[in-house]
Image 1 (tube, rainbow, N blue to C red):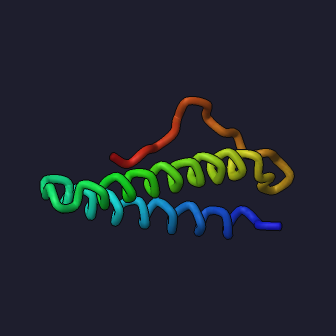
Image 2 (tube, rainbow, N blue to C red; image 1 turned 45 degrees about the vertical axis):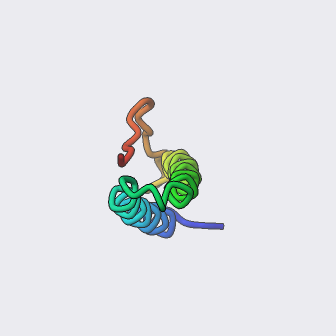
Length: 80
């Protein structure tokens, strides 16, 4: 079982990895030789985004001090 702080750390780590992937994609996207690599990186970013969404949902359900944390619907941060 993962507690709220561990989940927050995983969320930050995943967002950081996504940022690095976006930077890599930006660097190689204009190179025709790396077209396949860009496609693979794009799939990886989508996978990370799904993980982020799941973690945000789980974090919204974490009880803090006996009260359930309110999760704002429709307020997802996404890095592009």
